[in-house]
Length: 101
Image (cartoon, rainbow, N blue to C red; front, top):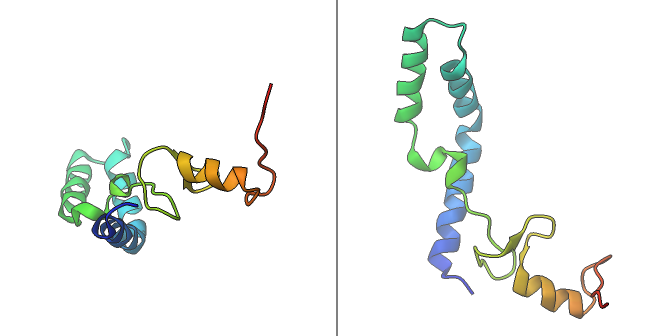
């Protein structure tokens, strides 16, 4: 199980990303728009830098829904590899079967 502080920190980051998502996307599009004047693009980049650091979507870490483990994460299931195997062997994940050959 991951430290509770790490899980809570990631949840705060998700909340900030959601709060600033529209503003972030707008400024990002303005900063990358080649048709605009260079000064407008520079102003957009400066405003983007003024946003909180944790408002950047890349700062959010994918974590297991049950344990909070950040490594070995499967996006399709929202679980890490260990939990995926345990729940899969118990038959608790629909459509997932253990393969043998």
